[in-house]
Amino acid sequence: MPDQSITQARTPGSEAREPGSGGGRGVSRRALLGTAGATGLVLGAAGGAVGYTAAPAQATPLTSVGSGRAMFHGKHQPGITEGLQARGHLAAFDLMPGAGRKEAAALLRRWSAAAERLMAGEAAPHGDTGVARDSGPSSLTVTFGFGHSFFARTGLDKQRPAALDPLPDFSADRLDKARSDGDLWVQIGADDALVAFHALRAIQKETGGAARVRWQMNGFNRSPGATAHPMTARNLMGQLDGTRNPKPAEPDFDRRIFVPGDGQPAWMAGGSYAVVRRIRMLLDDWEKLSLPAQEAVVGRRKADGAPLSGGAETTPMDLEKADAKGEYVVPLNAHARISRPDQNGGAAMLRRPFSFHDGFDADGVPDAGLLFVCWQADPLRGFVPVQRKLDRGDALSRYLRHEASGLFAVPGGAAEGEYVGQRLLEG
Figure (cartoon, rainbow, N blue to C red):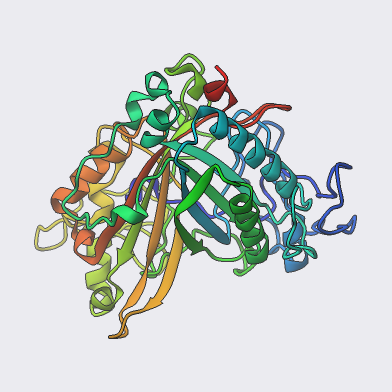
């Protein structure tokens, strides 16, 4: 959970959206009222950074949550630069025996068509279940990626990016191979749980005989409007989790997060690489620590996220500040110190995680933690160097267990009339 890239809270309604009525291409899930969402919504300036607009004067009313809409077509796929979403599903699929490039292309065409309709608030293209019948788009995003094994399965080995080489082993890894990797990866996020599930079910049904589910995980975040004003989210350890995430307004944001237009391979232009980790939090051990001990592990105050060196949440951390005994106020092994970009050669990544809770074991120990998802132009310069350093001495590591892992190449967004991955599969 590198602090240098921890996620920013999302202002509800701040993405590039429009009230969803189905765009005239089919029956919408809901005929949204013309005034729904007008109060309290803050729209970014044209061409501005999505998901990072100024806070509204008042909290977004819950009645407007359903009207939020993200766009399917664009330079980048949805679900990357948008802020945190209240409900999420991550799933990996493996191609069926005998399925190859032709079947994969047909599958991505079906998936893209379904995602476009669902994100517009329309019914699924085939056999809609009616689960989201009364809902608007609810900021639904659907994102698709390719795993390392996909390229051999489809005869596209020469098109596999070097950046997709398997991640190295880390000492905190306790990986379940059955819940790791996969030929194809899908990320679904929405501000309504039924809308998110509806999309997951539609995507799974559209696989037909081309692919089957390898693994699937469910996550959540704070709901829009749950706080008096937009603020950085908290994780299940109770820590503010999102203070130093890269922001689209920063001049080097695109260089760090997205593959350039002249990058290699060409089909990845405008794309990004997603590292996905199921990180279990050992909450029983964590909650036994005193508040000062927890803050020393993280390097930040629990109440407001401010660095232990003083100031407010966004105040730069003073790594040299010492107390009366001459000891650093931010311990040398504090998570926030070790994971800073300036302590890792400038390595940065954009994090959009979900919390998860999958019940309790026979002894009442919670199976809970973080579905870590981070985005970068090159994982060997983003995730890997930071995780290696955390692996060597992060005080937080003893309270975490990495139980599943995946790395996926996520191509750029589809233009009008195209499907995601078309440049790879038909190039």
